[in-house]
Image 1 (cartoon, rainbow, N blue to C red):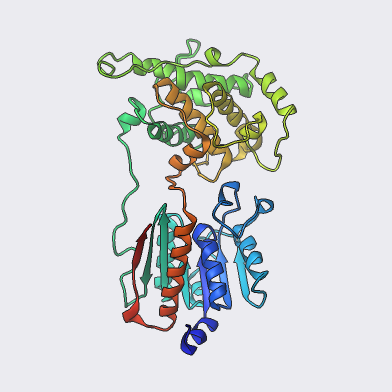
Image 2 (cartoon, helix red, strand yellow):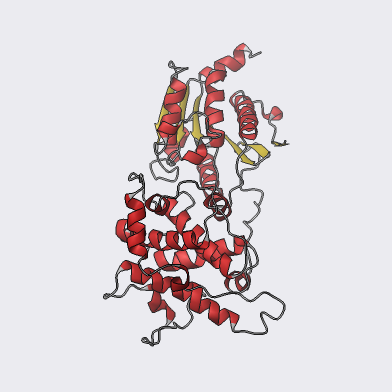
Length: 410
């Protein structure tokens, strides 16, 4: 039963929600049903098909649209008297400054990355606005309250660092698929689409007998070659020649299975471009997004690609980067929400895995590994959203002695 004091605090509160994903959908609904009247939402993401199983405010027709705006519209259908302002933007945008934060009575976080959480925490401290922080990981969830001068801030306690792997394991002796993923996104993707002048362990001497250049020249497209020739040259260098170099060390493989070099001609016919074109002509392709899977008629992200399919995706993704996103090349970094980047990394990781005798994985699995994603559970999100609102009401009432920093394990 809500008291008059609580109801008055709820109706008079101006709330900032950061994040409109798994926790955010549940949180916005719970805020609306609890009587909150004035809410701002910030979220930079658009809706993906993979969101639909748990982010219940979204439907298939919303795919590609702003999470913040669709969430607002969905809630206004059953609470039309509310004021909900949606910001389809990054919370780190300069316009969301200290003065912006000062207008709110409480900030509620439903974020999925450490950097953004720290940023919001510092803005809340500077603006002297209470923050209710939250997070879920599978069946685990937590809610913490951070009020300047009353409790510790979000950064007062060190957070666990993301798991890292020895460089020698990643570059020379991978034994798990995650090693192949890290190699594909942190070395190969970075080398091809990030700063080409960076030195990393792909920089071994090229096998191209017609050139005395070092391997960094391999990653620069030559004036006289088309994109398919360039793609095959990259493929042969990193999956063929580099593996030959790695496997030549007898001591390394004395007690391990020696990797098998893979060259493009061994896996794919030379008329790959023509075949890919024919496949695309016979498929209904989603032209609204740049996708190698769509180009090749591969639809299910939970299917595990064969070595041939991974190889074709690898070359097709490379081609699409140069055809559709050439202006970005040189400045790109891997993003788990970039479909083409995930396709490229999944394909490259699978080819490398095949070389080292490691089981291949689907794009769905690879995306989870590459983005350090533990797939969300709707029930966990719902419980955490409820706890956030309970703590937010305590904050609005200034019931400092009743604050609780809680966690759940289903």
